[in-house]
Length: 377
Ligand SMILES: [Zn+2]
Image 1 (tube, rainbow, N blue to C red):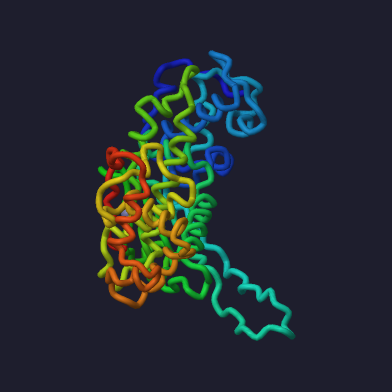
Image 2: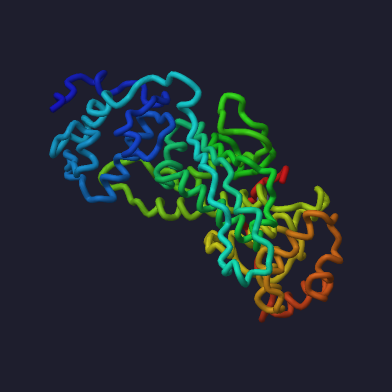
């Protein structure tokens, strides 16, 4: 058993520099990129608290903890860092910073009809399997909150990507084939998130061709979690964890829509672009608590206002797959309000008026969500 630290200097190393983790520690934190000591402590305290293993001043070690805390049954809570040192080393190269999911070629789409009776052409495309990259560039406690809320980030990002693509497109053949990678960068910046085009990083051989980059703000993550989140300690209330997971998943779903949606050759009404993104977030049950389906505004105010309107069109006007169809025609056609009439036989203003009349009572306050700056779809 590693002896307990005896001096203050032994337990106060530089807490914020990013370090490479051992395989064992990375398995515990579920973070394979470098992480600061503060970030690791946040992961451990969150785990210990969630599992009820804190018996101040000691931590009772389950099998998972024993692998990173020297195999002891019980360790002093203030001595955790001394056990972790053997799992930490300096960063040696850029590859330490990134998490890459580059799936091998997916199986061809199965033709489920018996070969002898099939008259339809065999599908030639499969659902896109882009290379996914996650770079957490914020090694402060704010960046560690992302890791705490999203313990298996590549699987999580893959799931979001699949959900978004299959919400926008009915068939693999319809999906954009030119996006070969999507990079998620978590960084200290103002705002919430945005999506833009990305060139491949020459230092990462997994990135080729054209891609998209989603930026996620750790300031927004901190604001969502609350100032006390991730500080550890015996009395920490962990209710921020599921709340933060829900919010980050919703934001990245919205931005992933921008990565994959069509935009009428760059002509599409910006409110509709944002409305489609929030419509898909809504359909994925990821609406944040402050959204409300409310009367008022204009059809192309964007975000949840337009998102709820699109939902109403699909649910009450008998136009199943309206948003998918709208997205699909925007691959080739420039934006025109007439597209609404083309797809559901009513003009968009008439539909909006009817939607407004569907609300009972007087107009209520409009959606007050934070703006999500988004561009470069
Ligand atoms: Zn957006």
